[in-house]
Length: 197
Image (cartoon, rainbow, N blue to C red; front, top):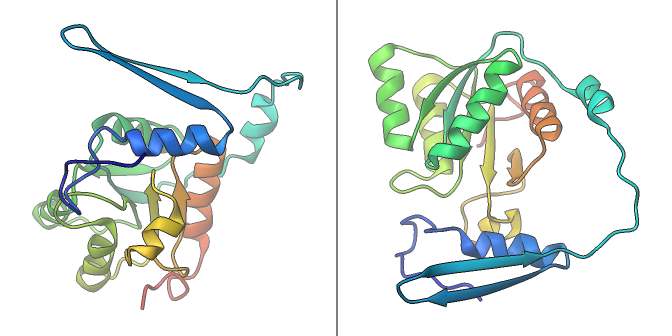
């Protein structure tokens, strides 16, 4: 089911493989109907559940690990996802510098003489991938606190040689509480532990 016309390491297109993977992992079905001149329709079906819905907003908010003014460099090539994550971080006490890819991130840091406390980066991006960017910033600005995010499963990225078991990784889609908890966990860890040597 996974097919793309894009070259390897040149981006992931519409992300339909990611959508398909999420739907199948949750025992759902996805149907596609495409009509020339009219467009394409995707119907996604999820299995019904007899569980009652409980509002856990209050309980979850207590678990949020808020920021203490730390400066985060956010690198994500999807504009909508980048804006969403930036809003979350800023709403919970972090300062954010954003960039759409690795090259722009390095340019922004150098131009503005910024030394962030942490890097949050997508893994698969055109040009420098997330791992290459993290390795570069480790050397350039001694940046050791890194959280990788991706729509791809960790096992796939590991098989492709992009990731390894010693990194902090969160697969998209993620919940706001789990994201904030992971950010806090990475920031609170000693820098020597998060080194990617």
